Length: 203
Image (cartoon, rainbow, N blue to C red; front, top):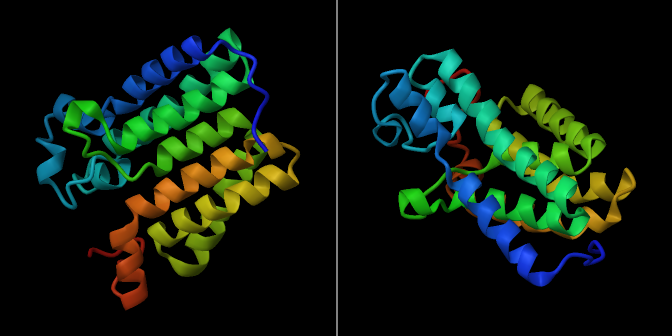
């Protein structure tokens, strides 16, 4: 199911563009430069997310990146919902997430989107967001593999939305989960080969 479209199409386009630009802000790069840690794209995996920021050894920078990347999705959803409605909120969430993964400011080479996904989910419907976080924690505790935890949390998010009373957000969760799968394709190959690094161990 999808939310009822109650907003003017032109305004929804404006929301999508604004949310995409917000999502495109590469906070990982901004934070690492502000902390004097160098260019994040030349560190570790080269990814712009909090996990790679943590490889600099600066936990504060990593935590700030995590919060800000999650906040991009959450803030986009909350503002769009307050100003227009649920249809705009879902479009804003999708656009912000897409912006993080394919940012115009970095030639469309962005992050894997897990933090932004969680922030978006929490803002869309916090019970489902909490369920996704708990799913991540459970899989991480059992497997000690961060990417696997993220993948399971993503693919189960439509189930949580359905079970917890927001069926109109199921399609959006499916789209977000599909994008996360695409962004994690290298991790999926390593998981299949048994070479994906575990939490707390260097790759």
